[in-house]
Image 1 (spheres, rainbow, N blue to C red):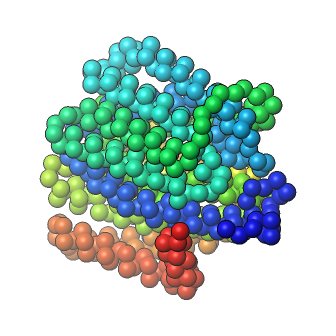
Image 2: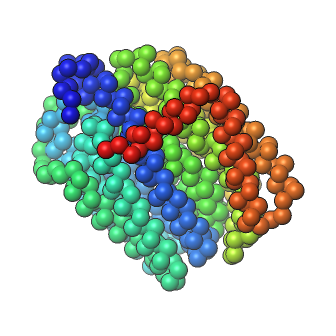
Image 3: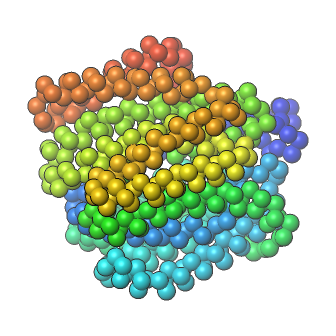
Length: 497
């Protein structure tokens, strides 16, 4: 390992050099994306099987119960974990133990609230005994997740994403295998209950094996005060995001019913899949990386542009291909025609996905450079728009109306681009427009070709191959040979230790 004192530091108290930040950030993006890609393919396959074995109403119960627990999970933190990652100075043992103490206390209170509120949830959503078991299983998984926080924070600060990805891989593998097997065996909703519980145990054991940390309790007023300076505004943003997403799902459950939420959840699951495959991994790396670069604006500008391009380069063609191929898949997959009512919502929510790919990185940037109040204002805007458009449109037009509301809210993200460019002049042409043009051209070619092909599995393979070729050639013509050198660097980073 090179001597860190011989390299340029971002500041005198930094634990990591600027050069190391850039190298680890690139490697982290590649590792998280590459090593989780195959597992995400497994998740796609698992979701496909689950939507065959389970009914829309059963999926609807899962989405509603998950949203309830996710909403409560917001209150399990006050932004302290994010503050530990964003903090410029070295973190102390008191910082870690204070965060751990506060978080465990909050989680314990939430579990009590969840247990006491179960009769209310049962009455509102008509939860069966199986639904209540799922609710309790998700609550226990929240406790397991809170125990993983400190080891995860330490790995993120060190930008050691090679280790951080392993628990995620094992969790995902365990969850999908258990859920699909039990659904195949006819366990219904209980498939999710067991899968969620096993996922929590596997992830907890794995993270402590890879990044040992001895849990301890402390309550330092000095540490708490400093961490809350960033943590509270950050958590307010998280609260608004929770109200905007999970809160809306819980609310829509009373409007659309379990079957309607099942269709909407199916559309969201597939429309957001490209984000889960690619964007989430990049965000996990760039938040701590941008935090280390926040005083190096030229480096930051180039890094933001490249990270946005990377996300858009992968997400845009995935979304276009998904929307064009989904009607064929619904038609040819056995027992899948029941999801046909969700095709229009899939298209509409995919509009939201496209905007999210281009702009979510920007709110991540604002948080990293300390512009947390600006992010808060944007989140207020998106939350208000969500609660204005989606319920009204859902009442009037049902599932399609709710999906249209998500599309309209997503399009407002253009405002975030304008605001962020006042702080960091990243390139719109390089980051967004080039992959958008290539994906649009690919879409036109696929639509024209689909009209002359029969509806079968061979046509799916041909369309995927044709779309890939058109997109790659177009990107090469727009970007030039640098795309090949970047790909080579990515493969090198992926296979290096």
